Image (cartoon, rainbow, N blue to C red; front, side, top):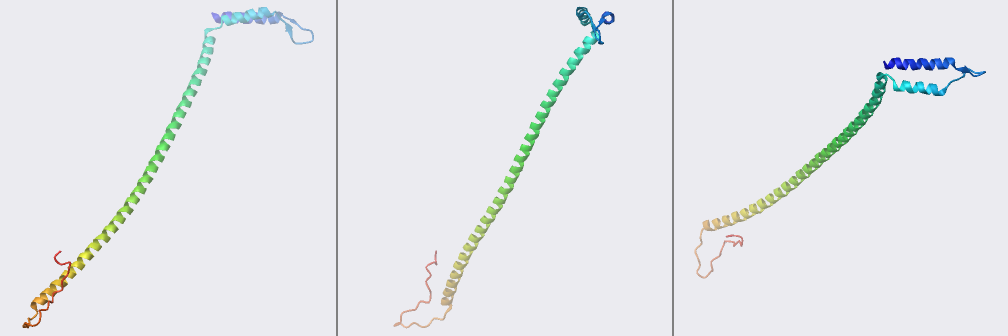
Length: 172
């Protein structure tokens, strides 16, 4: 029904243009502006619902597109932040792994140093023990030799000779 009203006013506007008087020497003509404005106002008031609905849809479409673009930008921003965080975490992990390798190298070097020092200490202790045992063995052999040696008759005028060397480390 509204379409008929709009068509009627469009026909009226066409009639106004047909009945208008031409301006001499031009293709322009004179019309009654108030009549045309009245027709336009009636057309606007009686515009079909489909046209009003389409204008509303176009406005909503623009709003939906704007909102979708805004959400897309937010998603991209969050994704970039997440990617940056992952890169930072990856760099932290790489730094931690490098630090762990360095700590392990230092621990291996320290263990080697301790083992070398320990080996030197053990060799030193064993060398001293070996020397002490050699000295004691020599003393034992002298004592044994002194005991096995044939005894000469003792001259009461001569003081007995002692064959045993006294070692101050003996008996300790």
